Image (cartoon, rainbow, N blue to C red; front, side, top):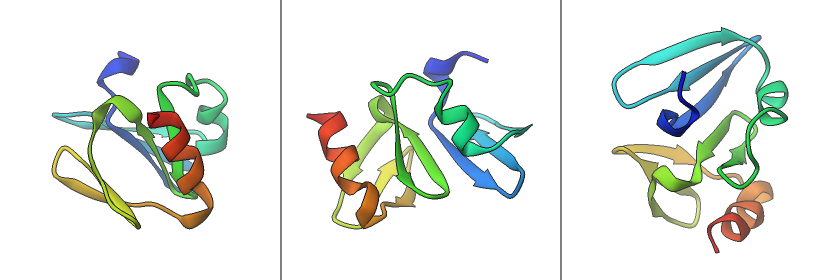
Length: 87
């Protein structure tokens, strides 16, 4: 799995859905565990259930962002980290 192809990661209980352009992989892991294995410059947590590839963001609004036509929520607690990572 090429990390550069990852659009976003989504927590799903004891699993994480790794969303790519054409497909989705499901792995047995927590989002927290995967967070520690991914580059903080390339990936940022935007919500307790979502982490995104910063280079894939097409639009940012006050409470959500868009990646590949998919709108994802941005929690207020993670918003500052997101803004720092894109600046």
